[in-house]
Structures are given as C-alpha cells and as structure tokens.
Length: 155
Length: 155
Length: 155
Image (cartoon, rainbow over all chains, first blue to last red; front, side, top):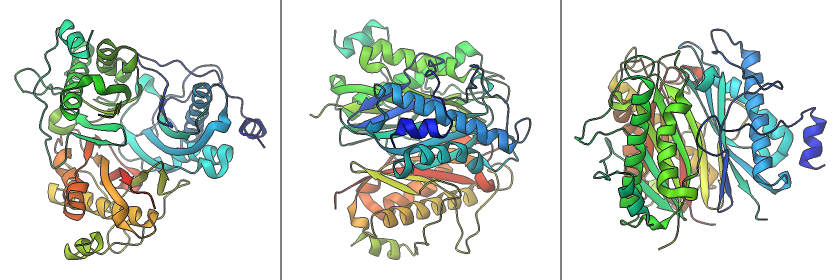
C-alpha cells in the first residue's frame, strides 16, 4: 500500500500546507535531510487549537492537537517532496513543545498523538527519535508545536 | 556583492564571537553541516539584553534582541569557517527560544528579527526552516536565545 | 585508553538504556548521524530526579541530574552502535532543557553536568555545540532532559 493510500485508509485528508506565520520557509532539504519548521495544530476550518495542558486543554484534546501537528508535518513533507511521499526514507526526529501549566507532566503522552500517527502512516520508516518538553505558552496561543527532521531519498 | 559587503551595507559590524558561557564549543562542523550553539543577544558593549516578553521587554525590543542573536550567529559562522562566509550554502534551520510571560503569544514575530536578518544577509541561501517557542526564562536572564544549523561548502 | 575504559576510570557504570516513555525509539542512525531522543535523569535505582531548579532542586543537584542525563545518553549511544563506542566520531550537539522557576538563570551551569561528562569520556570528540534553555516543567516531573546529535563512523 502506498503512503497516500495508508493516509486515506486512516481517514486522514491532508490539508493545504500552512503558510509560515512569519518570515521563514516551511521546509529546507539539504544533502538528503529535510528540516520541517515547527507546525501548529490546525483544525479543518483553518483555526488553531489553542490553550494549555493542565488548564483548559485536557489530555485527550492535547493528544489530538499533537496529531493535528503531525498531519500538518506530513502535508509539509509532501509539498516539499513535490507530492511524492514515497521519497520518505525515515522520520528521523520530532521535537515536541507542549504548552503546559507548571504541574502538568504528561508531555510524552501528548506528543504520542504525533508519534503514533507517524508510525501508522510510514510504518517502520515512521519510528523516530524524539524530545518532548513543556513551554509556558506557544505562538498564537497554540497548545502544541512540533518540528521534524526527515531523511529523504534522492530524486 | 559578497556576503561581507552585504553585512557592511546593512550597517552591521560583526562582533567578536562570544565565548561559550560554559563548557562546550560555539560551533561543530561535520559532514558539511555546521551546528551553532544557542546564541544570546549581546549589545555592542558586551552586555546582554535581558528580560521577558510580555513583561519588561516590548515587541520591538524583542525583535531587536532576536536580530542581535542573529548577528552573533553570523559572527560564529564566520569564525567557524575561517572567516569565509562564501562557504555558507544554506541557513538550514533556526531554533528560537523567547523568554515570555504566560500570555505573550508573538514568539514568531520576535524570532523574525533573526529570520529577516538571515535573508537580508544571505539572500535565497538565508531562507530557513524554523521553530519558535517560549521559555519561562533563559540563561543569564537573556530575552532570546537562538541556535542554528547551516549547510556549508567543502573547503 | 578505550572509551569503555575511560568510562570505568571515571567510576561510571552505564545503566541499561531506558525504554522510551512513549511511542518512539531511543535512537535513529541515518547517513552517519545518530539522533538520540531526549533522556531523563535516572538514578541507579531506576527512579528519576524530579523537581525544579530555583525551587526544590539546588544547583549541585541540577548539575548531577544533567550528568545523569549524559550517562543515559552514552548508554543509548552504545546500544545504538551495537556496543561499540569507538564508532563515535563526534558528539555534535546537546539540547538541554532545564525545569526552572521564572527567576533561575543558571541553565548553562546545570547543563555543564552533561557537557563536562562528554569531554571527560570522549576527549576532543566530546566537544560539542549546545543550546540550554528553561522549561516550566518536564515529562514525569524530571529536573532536566537532554537530547543529542552524534556523528558516527560507518561499520
């Protein structure tokens, strides 16, 4: 099954890749490595999941927000690879930042929303290294931000 | 125009590269990739821009602090490349950490101070991927810290 | 002296590599670069050093926690390299996250606990780039989390 078929099979429709909220680019490919900018958790209507874990975003909503970051990461990867997700050799590393109160310690569970998506979509190639940490707040008030490093096959 | 000429044209004088505030090195080059340690916003007199966005550092001062981090990143890149900035193939990724109160959400605008500098100095090669997040505080009380990944041409 | 001998000489016994606390893998090697997931400060009894710098973890305990993260990083590197630490070409970059109150500004000193370990163990090859920032809290309440990028020699 192709990656695109697996994405459809998971009931996921890739959104239009979000434009950067500032003066940078969503992805840079160099020497077989693709760096994807930190992605925010966009809803289908283009709004962002905002709030803070431990306060106004519960664990399930946090996991869902992380999955939304992951979906946007995949949309950015696809756009950067000219639409060809079969060029993904390996999801190498995710960097997850979770907006958290000082007593919320389940950042790892939240980030799993993106990690499990990567493995569901890319299989063995989706098994990645990761760091997951808390932040007091994130750009635009987002609940989660995740960036990625991806190894890609040459054209 | 050479990169050095463009820097002069922008009215920027590169400072002496700051010594690490601890036991590590400012830059490591390996296999064509240069990793620059997190840089703080130094003023011309060697002091650091301290404080927190949303509290005692306003947006304009935050943007300026991020630009100062960017200037120090370029100074470190130049030192790591033996003075030859023409070896910069691409500014690949910036990681921006903005000292913020819990209700300040313009980390992306702050980080633009460094991002716009990179594009002004390096042109197309300065267009980078980025993550920008908040931190409750930073080393030495700095307002912003930014690290970088740079692709470099072989000697 | 071999790296293993140097580790023993430093009085360090590498622990069993910690299992990820979530759905990801501890290390990914691709194109000569090894990415190690964020590691927490495990004690010999398997418990984690928890708390926050500036509150209930003093500087010395923070430095020790960072060293424990460093020991676990080395244990993960060794496991990822099939037990052969001589394949380490360079510790390239450490990313240190220090759980901190809003007025604690010695994240760099804390992170030195890991940085000095890397230089003691790997010598010149242990001299790395680094970023060190604060977080309001970390997964499982850990005091410090550190991830790593390592250049490795081919098999």
